[in-house]
View (tube, rainbow, N blue to C red):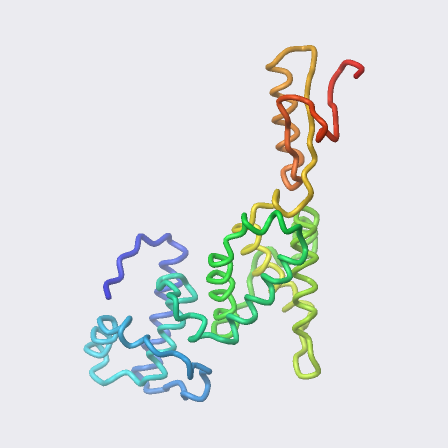
Length: 255
């Protein structure tokens, strides 16, 4: 497998840092214990990394332990260098189930009409990817961690916020405690996936608005643009003609 990427400075720095620390650890023969990785279901990582492993082994002058190959494989998946193929449900059953549970909560929070607009496979892949990252490479973020910043996300995405908070609460058990800081980090991780992959407009009941101002088409167009900009997280449907579905008639003239 060949790896060809056009990396941003941030991604390059992260990859360089990971490989530097990892290779230094390998050179000192401080290997990961296979019991530390719950990867019993992984089955095709060696084929995917054959070329990379050969190059690394030539550099190290000794064979890579299987657990270290798995560790590299997990990193490349979580940082989006490798795609999750059709076997990811079998390879990562726990992370897949977590992802599926969250998606089910999203479905239950909206009307059936919106289902067709949700790309469930894309959601499953991306949520599973971040759940793998949480399981094996969790690093506390240094941005968007202050409560005022969180408040902005919750205000702009009330439905997603409720779903995510309820889901995180469901993860708490007698054996699993989630601190406030960790809860905030989980919230941000999941909310970013949802707002990037699900159009907010399908999550709420549409409001049909007919806009008709006497100052002309350009002014009417301006009002429509202001509505779309200021209520972007509301499912506003601006109509060209007024009909029985119209909820709001917006005009400078009496109806």
